Image 1 (cartoon, rainbow, N blue to C red):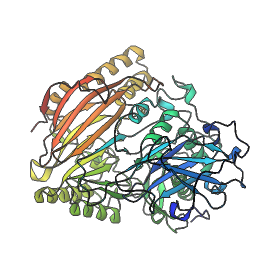
Image 2: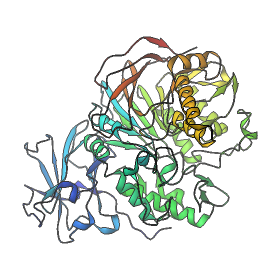
Image 3: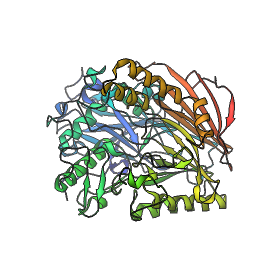
Image 4: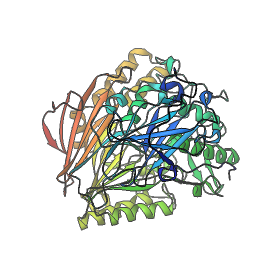
Amino acid sequence: MSNVTIRQPVRAAELTELDSTPEDDGGLTEAEPADVFPQSVASGGPTPESVILWTRINPERYDPSESLCLEVATDPSFEDDPRVFEFDGPGVKPPDNYTVRVDLDHDAVDADSVYYYRFVYRGVRSNTGRCRTLPAEDGEPESVRFGVLNCQDYQNGYFGAMARLAETDVDFVLHLGDYIYEHVAEGDPGGVGGPYPDRRIELPDSGTRPMSLDDFRRIYETYKTDRHLQRLHERHTVIQTWDDHAIANDRYWDYDAGAPVFPDHPCGDVPEFTRYLTAVGIQAWWEFVPGRIEYDPSADRLHESFDLYRSLRFGDLVTLALTDERLFRSEPRSWPAELLDPWSEPDPSRTMLGEAQRGWLRETFRESETVWTAWANAVLFKRLYFLGKGFIFWEDAWSGFESERREIVDTLTAVRERGDTNVVTLTGDMHMTLAARLRNERQGDTPVGVEFMTPSVTSVNPRERATEIGQRVGLGREFGRFVSWLVRSVSTSRAADYLSATGFLPEFALSDGSHWGFSVITFSRESCRWDVYWVDKTDDSATSECRSAYRVSVPAGEYTIHERREAGPGPDGDAIGTERSNPD
């Protein structure tokens, strides 16, 4: 399928270990780290025995005769006997887009440990990164804490949420998708032409959608020069999955044609092109994301080239399952006829995961022996109801794939009846904050888990969208302000209570469609706690205001959401208000 050969991460065990870093300056004595390492550093793919480290060399500073070194230490000052690894040969190759991936394995790391690292090229040291390994599988951690992010449209705001999460005490960061947005130069309010002209991205092919590998590379390179995003990667090991915008908006797979379809792309119905663009989009993801992913660009079929779905185990406390909900998904149900009756499924073969991944996910739930099982799930799993009647409002979400959703709900029901683990679904995509109890609708009130949706970092939220629509249809700025006020009013705790009580959004403990930010989820043996923080995307400072919006807790062995809410200080603050439970 592709003539490109992508190197697997270089294993530290295969590198030459030196007593110290060579002092050769390579002619760049005066250069700053950003001049040689323009995208800084990052880490990902953690296991108890290893973690993948990443950087990219500035092509203008590349010299094939110069070697690359990696320094690793247990202290940020690198004074306590750091280890130095030298690449045999240059260690950097142009076909890899000058990216470097090192699997810090062998005897270089211990389980459940923090390390500091930096790369050295031509005498210039990169910024220092901090990485972490997983607890041993038989370990017994008292808690595991994740920062959670999703939906970060570079053109639609600033990454202040990342700056604040970078300074938050978490063990790992979980990114649920839409790390990049493929569209440029048009689209959402607040994009180019709006209040963020300094966030403009120009593609090499001069279009508004990517047409080539170079276009995808330009998008990633631009995103990863953002200093707040860099700081996040420098401070935390990030575990990532993807959503549609990594390739094309609302993409799905046409199983008859054997090719993806991109409804929002000018060439999205040409199979030869969509196969090509998906392949190069995957390659760009691989180049810029340090994930422990099975990737074979020479595979005959796209579905065989990229295995994004995987699970991680954090001792006996948490199992984390990450799914790929885009590469295998069928064409969604059509609006409105097929969506009026959510219990029907005109095509039982309709799938979001594909047969192999669906079987893997169900088996992961069934075999989990940890206190908690967390599912990194890109789109809403909870079914929506309107005025007491089931209705598929968001066909792109799980309610548009009813047959497959039922299979997963049945698996969660069996897991719940056994009582071996507690299931928490972590979701993004809709640019909102939601918390809800999951249940088996065909068995009355049987609870099977809880779902928490984290707000977007910058991507347009419902309040922004409603305001934009009001202005577009010619109703004027004042109407736009009224719609903005209305959505903000609906997105309050009391409104969520009312909508739930009237059957409009049953079992939603909270909802908010007016803010951006991030969340932090803490798993302990007694409970999991989910904290939501609001950060204003219009502020580009590293100290932008960070307000504690919601705090939700779920006791182990229960499926009741206890909530305390009150906007207060950031992640280190404790100003949280009154408590209530989700409706029964």
